[in-house]
Image 1: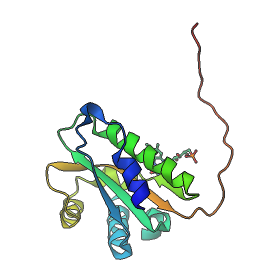
Image 2: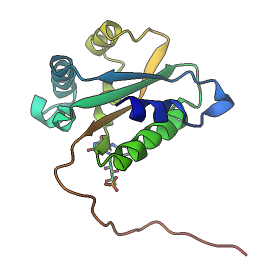
Image 3: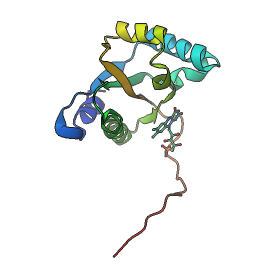
Length: 147
Ligand SMILES: Cc1cc2nc3c(=O)[nH]c(=O)nc-3n(C[C@H](O)[C@H](O)[C@H](O)COP(=O)(O)O)c2cc1C
């Protein structure tokens, strides 16, 4: 877990300001409360929003005023995903929770987690033991060489 987080913290980020913060949550009751709130606002049951039952969920917050926070968080999260892969762990980006971070009850819960009002959730990632090995995927994106 420390290695994964260190790799996130070492990620490239705009101006090297390193204003991102990593909250590593292993507390299942807290994750359940977060999943309940997601279900309340986005619909469905807790089980559909329970971060895939992962034992570690990392919330990256950053200053609201950082215009590059999503890009910075993307770099940090990918660093952590690659670190997890190198340890034969699985990982996934979770978008749903970030989309409700402006709701009053969510703000209160984030306060409990020590997220101050000047910060927003920039990215959420779940880490755990994969149910299946990595799969081959068809690449759809294009590469064009201009020589
Ligand atoms: C910005 C971003 C948002 C994503 N949001 C979610 C999500 O909310 N829930 C989820 O299960 N997977 C999410 N994913 C994972 C993608 O669905 C997954 O990376 C994609 O299907 C390719 O699969 P692979 O990563 O196994 O190659 C997200 C990935 C990215 C990069």
